[in-house]
Length: 253
Image (cartoon, rainbow, N blue to C red; front, side):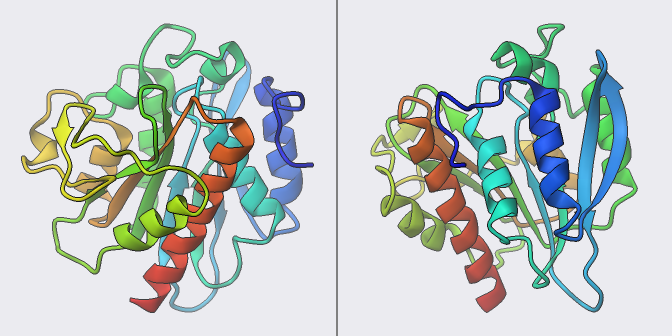
């Protein structure tokens, strides 16, 4: 059933059960890596035999951003996670925030600022799991932004690999507006809807997940953002389209 406001699983137990039910027949292995207030922290891996691009996707680090977990569940149910890649998926990094529909976790910590020197048990456990994984060829962190009026993305690409940004913007444009502001989240755009930070993000005092991953696990790193003001179904559809376009473009490159 497509996600709507009426069937949104605000209970992380419900979401995790749905994701796990769909993941097993798709060939994923569930890897519990911690627990918070009785809620399991689970990564899902699908290690396809042979040389395949290693793709990491995450969602749900901000509990008031429900479209990203829903989008990953929809893609899973639609067979997106096929044999083209080896997959590493963390669909719900902040279950207590998801339950409360808050950006922060139950202890009022913004988990997406906790990766440089982790203080929260969720991120400490996530980092330990990441340290056991290989480097990734493509990293995408899936988000929403309550302040934006359109889709946009961050690109961290220090090795100047072929960009996926244009394909992602084109896919998003078919479903929702592209953010038109020339300064987004305090940062000037490089192109419409695309932020490429000029200063080295590793120098920041606090690290989001994307910066930790870029520094330790791979050099092609995207954060994608839909505007929270749009209907949930439109946000889910946008994320789904963008992720499909990103993978298609990466496999062509």
